[in-house]
Length: 438
Figure (cartoon, rainbow, N blue to C red):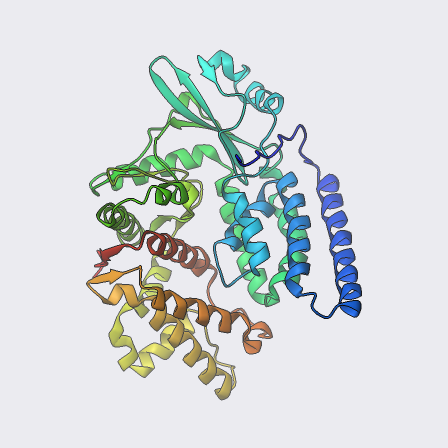
């Protein structure tokens, strides 16, 4: 049976009061879920907490998908990390990558009228009334004009104006579900807010896309769309329609390992060059932003989330990749101070604990950089990563820390590598992991 498409929305709550009311209503539902869960536990001890997670995930996703925007984007980001969310939340929030409920066509027309003074059918020869893809911030329609085929991304109404208020409202859910340290949350939410503001500016996305595509044109097997300023505004973005399949669909065809390796190598080289030569990076590496082809070429789309890396932070962040740093205790300790992992006023015991913990984290995560060639199909390596992440998420000293542990600039860089590693693991890619900075 074909998967049922989400029903199109005719309205989106756009005012602060309307959106706050949705969050309050969801909070009441979650409270009810907890009451029902504990009532069931009284009569049936076999009722698991996963049942509670499943009910909560359903209610939260229903609200976020209706509101769209920043809160749904954060849910999508969290779903990429297997250690961050209980399974029920992860599975539900992953839907935000591909299949959020789309905007109805009359609202799409209204957006075109606002920015172009014309309906989409007056600008293009054809324009699909139904969205081809709907995600957290916007949805994509297919259009043609003459002999050209376009992907037209239309932003949901009110998304750009509700970022700050949405993130404040989603905060209690993040604390409740994730048990996050409040100081870390403060630090990271400010970074997320700044990145989301940039992500809602489609003219800036077009500028970043053109710049990165030109700089990376020499990397084999990559394909970038051309963007069209005459059909682009801050809330509507038009580019070439690229063919290809997202990762799950691509893998269903059981492509040969040679092709998987070729795509994996192109991915690695793409991120390596941006990170170390450009000091800016496509920081949204979930499978929905890549189109894979049987000939081993890779289409790269959606440059809304681009992290600009401060030069001073770049030097500190990548200092730990040098394996010799573990032979120099003083240099390692200074790097951990610079990265915000430890502080001068930490107790000796706490400092020792965090030094050991973050040393283990770095040793594990940068292992691919220290080998000329790395097999990302090595499940033992990924099991070690996930087990460490699970231990880290339950570490009381981190959760109760009165200071953030890490830099806000690390958030999107770490997210980028996590997404990259995950895709390479799914491809079982065995590739050269030399880096252009060494």
